[in-house]
Length: 278
Length: 217
Image 1 (cartoon, rainbow over the protein chains, first blue to last red):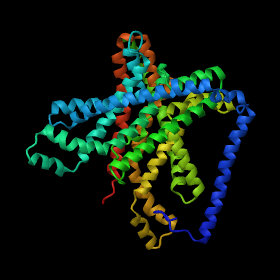
Image 2 (image 1 turned 90 degrees about the vertical axis):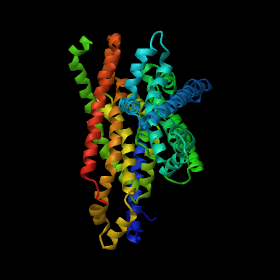
Image 3 (image 1 turned 120 degrees about the horizontal axis):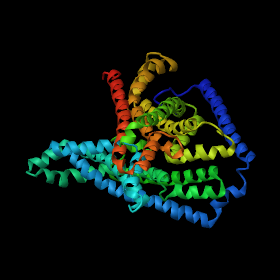
Image 4 (image 1 turned 180 degrees about the horizontal axis):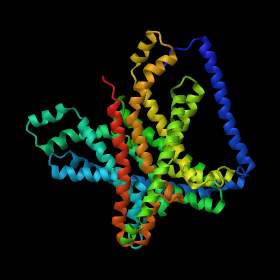
């Protein structure tokens, strides 16, 4: 093993590292054992507590009313967010200040405000009562937030296309719109696609916030289940596992798309937002 | 709106809770995240693997589920029973944020070019010396911008605590909106500006640090 930080270890260091490994494994094993013992001690390993997750009826509820709804919300909001991002990203790139300044303001505003605050506002302003309900409140809030992040991604993606491309296009007499549509956009989309897919992971995780405004989705189904069986601990584990599996699949797709379209280069790091969302 | 203005102390109190959550979980996740990051880049395979599993799991779990786990799940195995909500909120935020801190630190350490470590070994520094005098000072600087983004995301993530009975800014905003539906836009903007101030102060601070510690290349 060779790393940036250390030489290949000699025999004595190898022995020391082996000792550390054993100690580390022991400590981790002890922690796991303590948790399991705790679970056993408090009766959390009882079959009744896990029953809903092996009962077809509840599994169906989790997958259809939960996962499917969550995926739908995430997918719809990402589609809208891409449109929003394209419009405002293009707006930010505009040479006219009266276009770019308001776009900048909108993007910065929605990026700085917590999604949950936005969601609560949208829900009480337009969703509740005769409004469009909690499902679309989640979608609208996620669209505004992810759209703003994607506007940044989009702007950076266009800027990442080598300058010569735009210059060459201008030189052969294209107009600004043509340069954007024919030359820059097709290349930028290729660079942006992985970032858009990773943004889907963020959107998918954020759909869980619908819990606060009683929106459907995985967390809502989970809440019903633990309301009935009082198995919060187990439900949390199951919910987390579902999210982890789905997100890992999405990440895997993003990596695959990246390799397919961009090659082995590092993924475009536009903003940390694409990785650190809620 | 008058009612909100006359109760402005409630707004400030709510943001005080937000800031407490932010500061406590910020410090805790910096500490825990650094430990994780050290495990991750360190030479002990078991610890590196464990840290990487932790990061993968936590990064792909929604913060809300982490909150459910800490607030509703752990009391079932007799942990954290009777602990104040603020502490539970800090724990949940720390569990979540430290995974991102770990990633930021790892990427910072990895950003140091291999030549630096090689050169420091070539002039005969021991591992400890080369870490102390060559690698870490540079890693520290490289880590500032990503860490700042992580902490800014944390500032926004404190809002999730609203769903678990903590009267911080988002919960307070919902309370006001419930009582004064006619003023909801102004109420929303008031609270949004509060968050924007927090975020802007943090990013200004980060930019200041970055400029001060910039490595002359």
